[in-house]
Amino acid sequence: MLYKEIKLLLDRRIAPKRFLINGDMYGLQYGQADNEKEIKKVLLTIDLNLESIHYAIKNKINLIISYKGLISKPINKFNNILIKKLNLLSNYPILIFILNSSIISAQGGISDTIMELLYFQLEKVLEIKNNRGNTIPIGRICLPKSYTENSVPMTVLKLLKRIKSNMSLESLSFVGELQTVIKKICIVGSEIKNVNYLKEASRNGCDCLISSTINSELANLAKELRIILIKIPLYSSLNITMKKFTNLLSLEFPYDEFLFFEIKEPTKTYN
Image 1 (cartoon, rainbow, N blue to C red):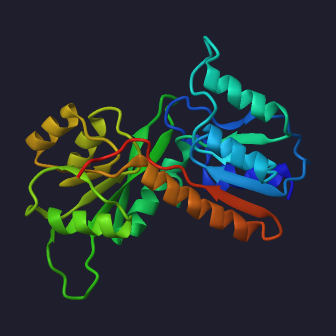
Image 2 (cartoon, rainbow, N blue to C red; image 1 turned 180 degrees about the horizontal axis):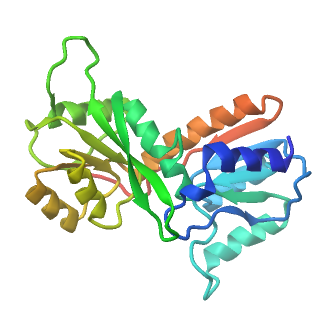
């Protein structure tokens, strides 16, 4: 395939640039590519750590598609890790394409992936405005569904068990009571930066919010609004979504090779 073909598919369908939340890096961050450059081997990953870069070089990758970039802010000082990464990359003709927050809201992106994994029924999308005034369909407002026709109320306990089972998680953080019945759920497949998401979920009649953030401010407001908060580790959601994108790209370009490099959650829990 040509670089322009995969670039077009990323921006038109998989992770549209217009869905970036606020000033995130998007597109080619490293390397030089004209639209006619041939790409035969692609690696998808969520982070450009040294291990993933070594893996790309070992497997002779032409293009890395990553959620996170080499840098996220302007460089004031080169640290040793960044220098090691650039030294590695400088010896090989690899391109790096960054997706960032565009994959949260996209069709089939993180919010959609969580909804599908948890067997929820979509009611409508939760929209926000980014700093450029664009409407971003960042969340999914859903109704819980039962696996059987004999529907029984969805409690917090049942939902936590479903999340752990369907997403292969060992533990979950939440705010609320285990026996509380849940009627409508808002999914935001990212970290929540402020309480506006929680307030918007409440205005839409949601009594549960699933995201990758729980902090004291959100927890206290959730108690006041009587909303259940459930935190799904971001790395888990990202890995599942990027793995799905790897399969999708393999179907779109069957004569080229697509690999996925999984990066584990860096923080540990003690149960």
